[in-house]
Each structure stands twice: as C-alpha cells, then as structure tokens.
Length: 196
Image 1 (cartoon, rainbow, N blue to C red):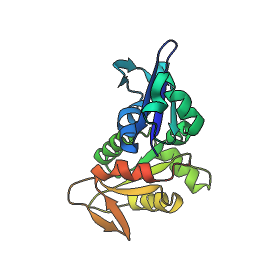
Image 2 (image 1 turned 45 degrees about the vertical axis):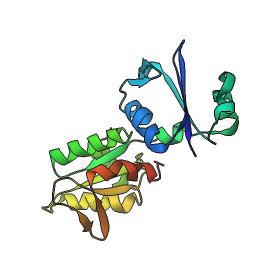
Image 3 (image 1 turned 60 degrees about the vertical axis):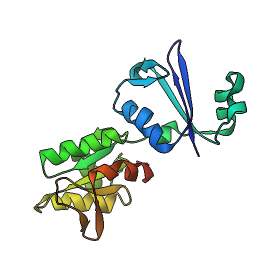
C-alpha cells in the first residue's frame, strides 16, 4: 500500500500522496531521522519546527484528491504509521572506527538514528530490553574479540541484527548468516521488524 504524508508547521502545510516505500524513506524519513531540513512543495521544512504524519492506505486517484480533500480521504481510509516507522533507534557493532562510521552513515541513509553500542550491550548482557530496532554488525577480515559482541547482537536481536561488509573483499556468509553489502542495507532495514 502507498503512503501519504503531512508536514505541518505553525502556518504552513504540505501533503504528499501515493509514495512508495523507497520514495518515503529517501525523501522524508531519512532526512527527518537525521534532523536534516527537507525540501517538499518548494519549501524547506525544519524537523525541529515541523510535525510529521505518515498514513498507510489505499492509493488515492484524481477524484479522491479533488477539491482539497486528499488528506481527509487519506485519514478516512488509512492507518497512522508515523510512530511505527520512526520508533526506536539502531546501533552499530564494529571493531574499527572506519566500520563504525560507515555503519552510522548507513543507518542515517535508511532513516534510523544511531545510538552507542555500549549501553545496548549492557542491557542485553543483563537481560533487559535494549531499546533498539536494529543493529548493524560490521564485518572485517581479521577476527578478534569483537566477535563476542557480534554474537551477542545476532543472538539477542534475532531478525534485527545484520552482518555488513565493512571493507572490500568481505562478502558471502559468516557462521551461516549472509553478509550484506553496504548498498543493500537500507532495503533490508526497512523490511526488518522495528520493535525495540
């Protein structure tokens, strides 16, 4: 189903209708999560001064959008998914600074805010809720003590922890788990469960 978006500031409003998932993430959710200004309807919107609503619902055709009734029709037939889409942040597990920086950049492009692995690790080790929707485990050629953290993330966050090649030449599978190429991370994260 397509998505419909409302941006609202104190005196301005803009609506976008019939966005597919990739367009929604690229044009709205990724910059919004990174707190970057968005350009919509020939205007720049500052996330700190704007309210965002995202509805998922049936495609709206010409008659549904006529006479300024598009948003009313979207609300009548759609479901508000704003909170669900922007819910919990994600984290990066990496043995190198370069891998960490790449992971944070990949999360930002996919519309996730990044949080530090340290507190997430502590929560998982003590059996508490981690408060993250996903983890990127950055894979390098040389194994080391970081594999313990990689295993913790994969075991404690099933379906939400993803191995990602942090350097060229790392691909395939590790311990039976696919290693994603950086360019495929955004699509995979958007298909993952986002519960924290």
